[in-house]
Image 1 (cartoon, rainbow, N blue to C red):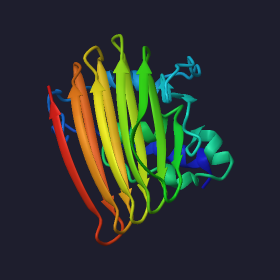
Image 2: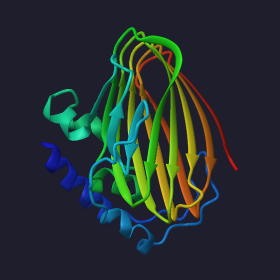
Image 3: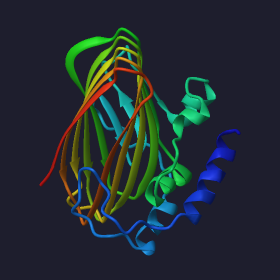
Image 4: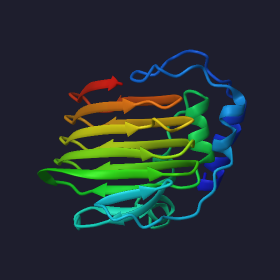
Length: 240
């Protein structure tokens, strides 16, 4: 199937899937069960492009903006990465496991691709800043090549009473290490859904450090899929 056919199928599954009434997040459990009308804004988000923020790696309202001083990285809108053959359509999606995840996969209208090459090693931490002041639904993919070591800080700063859905597939190459620092400032949001699915190849290592300042309803999920032997993952998280 091509991209539009996959998205149509994801929308169909999202429409059929019921809302889960259980608090099944591995990190943030401060939210109350969702109601159908609360997820409607995520089905109607629009795309307006980037506001041009000036930081190392930046997104605004779900759109990729800037990549400064990181010549080794590739940073593209998701549709550009697909059209250039850097990302296969199926790599952007996973098996949907609940309604929020299905909505993110079926109704996203923006997103980015971040590519980190093989044999990249740097002790410096790289910042990926996400800002927003309106509703958005974005889906992204990060690829880390084999034999690499990366420290990545994702910083979410959301303003206004907005509804956001932010799903990312991270593909961690063989014998690579990722230290992922997630800092979510969701205090002013009506609904914040942040999901990271990390697909690990053999001998890879993942360390997730996660801090959340929750909004009215904050749902954060870290999913780890170990496709190769001797992969190792650790999670450290807190909600304040």
